[in-house]
Each structure stands twice: as structure tokens, then as C-alpha cells.
Amino acid sequence: MSRINATEARENLADVLNRVAYGKDRVLITRRGKDLVAIVPIEDLELIERLEDEIDVREVKKALADARRNGTVPWLEAKKDLEL
View (tube, one colour):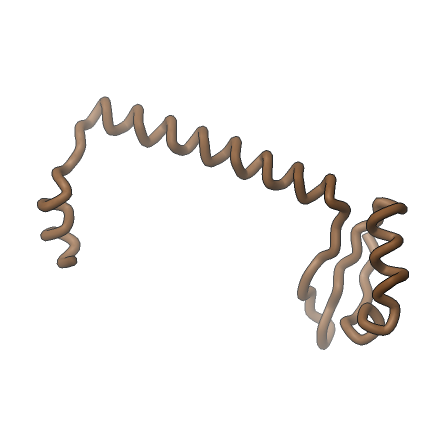
């Protein structure tokens, strides 16, 4: 993974985009020595989003199983408890 500062990224944006899009490089952009953002190939982003979706589905399944096992709290009761 390459690391460049924001000024360099701005001055060489076309080159940075080409390195990422065609060279499959990942570029970490820094500001004042701190990591700020990353530019990654679209395939990497799609993979991250698929993984996040899979994690979300697993969490929902766990929550539903827990609700079946332990029951649920009526909305009005939960709302009162949360002072909403």
C-alpha cells in the first residue's frame, strides 16, 4: 500500500487514480502525518460491502434467535423505559 500526503494526492490525482484503478494499488492519503482516507480499487470496496452485508445478516439472525429464546418487550414499555 502506498502512502502519500493530501497535497501530493491533489497534485497527482490522475496518476493516483490510474495506480488504483489499473495497478490495483491501495493508496493511503495522509494529512499532517495522520492517516486520513484510502483510495482502493472498486473490487476491494465491493468485497468490503459484501462482508459487511454478511455480518449484518448474521447479527440479525442472532438477534431474532435471542428474541425467540427470551421474548421481546412491548414497544410502549421500551419507550417508557427509555424515556422517549
